[in-house]
Image 1 (cartoon, rainbow, N blue to C red):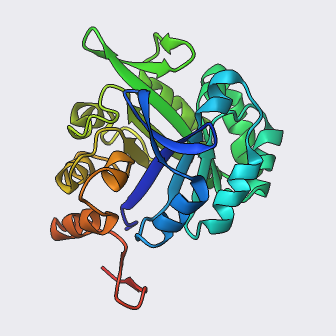
Image 2: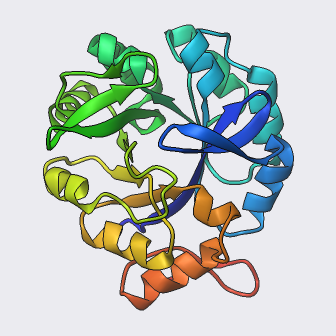
Image 3: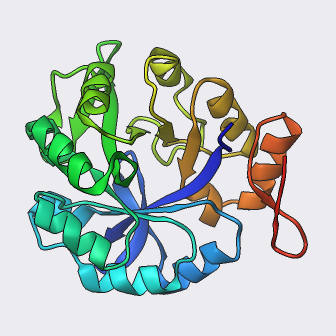
Length: 259
């Protein structure tokens, strides 16, 4: 059985890593390379960095920063934002990323997912879905176009069919609130997909992470809790382990203990 992952998910904006609240009100996390060094020492399983400048303004992907982050990052690195072509994926992977996260391009052209997964492998392709609730129904949301008349589960099932390896599922309403993950959204997705779901948006305590896994998430992504709370990634992993959830825990010698 695969172990459940604990993953920082941060935004790249104006050459800094930031955290948002409901996709607005950005708060600086830190410089990309120094932040990557911190994550290396804190027993996180992966790192997701989403370039919101490239995504929103159709800018070139900042491969210089990606290379700087990758040089300091000893865990798997996923880069998203501004991925619009196969050439973009080559650039990101050549800069040092292990995976790419694709959002807007996937909504517009699902065959792009099929082509990308056939070239790079499904394990390299993460499809990101941002979700907002409207009139008591979940809808897909993008920063550029707002709320779309698209059901997020239907979209996720299509992504799976076209070769996505994982789904990064973000609740815009819960993002940065520290009130917990959207468990209703997770319940809506539970047991519907055969590929992993990384839930993002709302973690404020280790208990929230336990709730997310117990409600169907395969991995938890977060930012606020890692930088602006008293909790560490190891606190989260200990809480998961105490609730009989399989996670990677390092012993005092930095070796992965078998669970």
